[in-house]
Image (tube, rainbow, N blue to C red; front, side, top):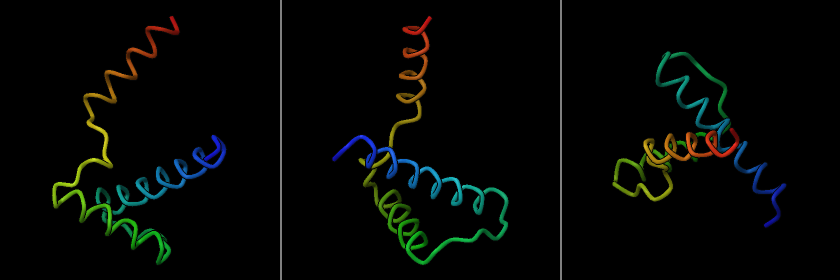
Length: 73
């Protein structure tokens, strides 16, 4: 898979997660396609069932981010 395709898919996932969080946090309606709704349900169900392999540990992500900043300094 090319980097362009991977980047596009990542942007789609981030957008979907952003919409999901908006609904959860603010309890406001958000336009979500049927495909996006199915993806949200699938990912939430997997998370609740303990299939956390698709998810990044927050501490790991924060640590990786701080290491990248240190390298750039």
